[in-house]
Image (tube, rainbow, N blue to C red; front, top):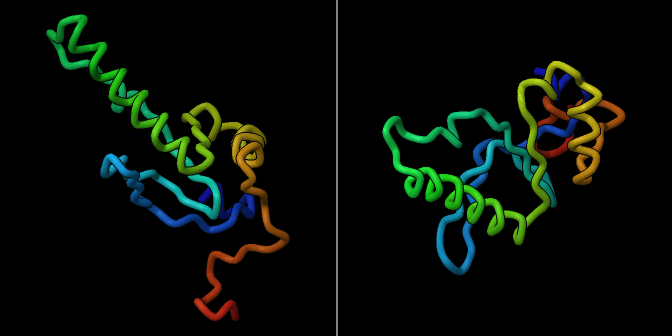
Length: 114
């Protein structure tokens, strides 16, 4: 809803990315030349009772995923705090080339007609 109100171009959802090593993962939002990921803490959660080595593996795996993804496209990341301050979200996306439109195209059909 916030992206719609801010006239951010309609993103594709859960866009899958792969490279020569296989599936990288699915990103939350996709635009031409950029993707967006809303980061919650769950992605970085360390299992209860995990050793330092296990914790390191969780963080390293996410870092490697991010590196592979960044080799394919621009990556914008935001958290809840950014959503509470819409100018922050606009700046994060603009930094990756995702700019507001003059009018919303969220309800345009495939032909471009409204």
